[in-house]
Image 1 (cartoon, rainbow, N blue to C red):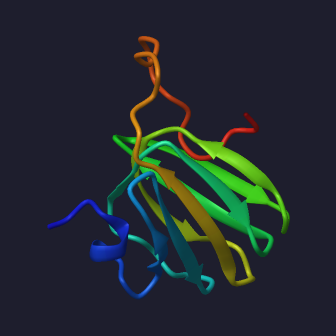
Image 2: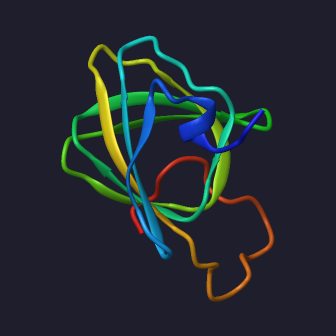
Length: 116
């Protein structure tokens, strides 16, 4: 099975633009929808609607609640997600194709989006 969300979850993710430096994914789901495990490279996430989600990875879980119009950094990660709210979730992911300029620090990366 592919870890590319546009391949593993094509009913929820779609590629809206791609070139040699970035790929932009549109994401849309309804309350109760779930994604299978997939991977994101370093990305910028833009929320088009407010939402509440549960993200899971490697035995860890976190709940994320964001308002419409927020912009968040999403460090490279693998996760699955579930819409645990009562509204549709719509987001854009601007995935970076270039590797990070320095190696990530030892330790666990945050699960889900972070402010910077």
